[in-house]
Amino acid sequence: MEFEPVIGLEVHAELQTESKMFCACPVVDSTQAAPNTTVCPVCAGMPGALPVLNQKAVAYGLRVALALECEVNRISIFARKNYFYPDLPKGYQISQYELPLAEHGHLLIQTSEGEERIRIRRVHLEEDTGKLTHVEGGSLLDLNRAGVPLLEIVSEPDLRSVEAARAYGEALRAILRYLEVNSGDMEKGVIRFEANVSVRPKGSRELGTRVEIKNLNSFRALERAVSFEIERQSRILAAGGVIEQETLGWDEARQATYSQRSKEDAHDYRYFPEPDLPPLVIADEWVEQVRAALPELPRQKSSRFMQQYGLSAYDAALLTAEKEVALYFEAAVQALPASVSPKMLVNWLTGDMFALLNQSGGLSGLGRIPPANLAGLVKLVAEDEINAATGKEVLAEMFAGGQSAEEIVQRRGLRQVSDSALIAALVRQVLEECPAEVAAYRSGKETVMNWLFGQVMRRAAGKANPQVVRRELERQLKV
Image (cartoon, rainbow, N blue to C red; front, side, top):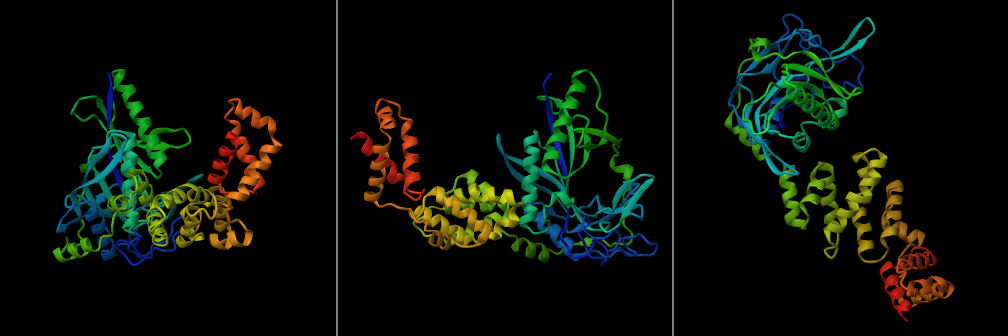
C-alpha cells in the first residue's frame, strides 16, 4: 500500500522587542549574556508580581498577521497554559488559545509541483520559556529568555511533502525578516519549528494519527526529522501496526526521532483566562495603520523584479530570498548604465559574489563591496574594458581590500587589449611556433583550438579580448 504524508507546522518566532512580553527586563542574546542577569519578579514568577502587556510585541504580531492575510480578532484573550514548565518559575505559560490575535490566513509557496496555498490556522502571542542546561547530577536554569515575546504561527495540515514543509518554513522566515520582527538566526533558537506529521493511504481523506516533533532549529533538521517520521510511520502501518500519538524529539547524532512523552490534547493544558490581564482590544485604526506601513514582501518584490528588470522567476526568487540581497541588488542596478543588462549584474552577484560571501561567513560580508562598486565592475566587463577572467580576479581583490574595480584595473594595468592588429600578431606568432598542433587541427582534431586559444591568452598575459582572439584564431587557421 502506498502512503502519503500530512504535515502541519507550528512556528515559534521570538519578536525583536527591546523588553520582554510582560515586564521591563531587556531582551538579550541568551547565547552570549551571563545567565540570569535580566530577571525581575515578574519573569521570575514571584507571588504578587503583575504582568503588563508589551505594546510593541502586539504591533509586531499584527504585522505578521496582516502579511499572512489573516483576520485580526478585534478582541483576543490571554490564558494560562497549565503544564509542568521547569524553565518557567510560575509553573504556567501565558499564551492565547480560544481567542488568538488572528486567524484564517494563508501563505503561498513554490515547489516542484507548482504554487501551493497553505492555510494559516492561527497567529497568537505568548511568552518564551527559560533555558535548561543539563549537567551531571542536575540541571542549570537561565531565566534570561523567560518572558521574551514569542509569536506562534500555526498552519493547517496542508503540506504534503518534505519539500513543501521546507519551502513553507523558508518563505515564512523570509517574511519575518522582511518585516524586521525576527532576525531569522536559527542557530540562536530565535525561530523554531515543530512539525505535526501523520501518514495515510494515498487517496484517503481521513487524517491519520499524528505525532509532534519538537524544537527543530534548522531547515536540515526539519527535512530530516519529517522524512524519518514519514518512513517510520509508513513502515509501521504497512506491517499492520498502530501509530501512537506522542511528542517526539530529534536526535541529530542518531538521525532519528525519539519519544519524549505521550501527546497531550488541549484539555490537558487546562487553559483558563489570565486573571491579571484584561482582554486585548485592537482598534480598527491601529490595524489600518499597521497595514499601511507593511513593506514590500518577498513575493511582491520577486514579481516586481521580473517585470521591472526582465528577470526569470528563478533569478527573482534567488535575489529576494534575503532582504539584504534584494536591497543590495536594487542599489547596484541604480548605479548601472542603461546600456548594461541587469541580468549581467545578477550573474555576478549570485555567482562569484555569493561564492566569496559563502567563503567569508555569509551576508555580513556584503558591505565589503558597495553596490556601486559591483556595478562598476560589471560595467567594465560589459564594455570589454576587462574580460570575465580578469573580472573574477578583480572582484576577489575588491572583496579583500575595498578598492573599486576601476582603481584596481588602473593600478595593475589590467585593461583589456582589443587592438586587432596586436592580437593578429600574437596569433600568428603562436601558430608559427606550434606547427604540429596546427596540422592536427586542420586534419580534423578541433579540440586543439582550445589549446591554441590558451597559448595566445597566456602570451597576452590574460588581457586580450577573448572574442577578438577566437575570431582571429579561426580566421588564421582557415588560411
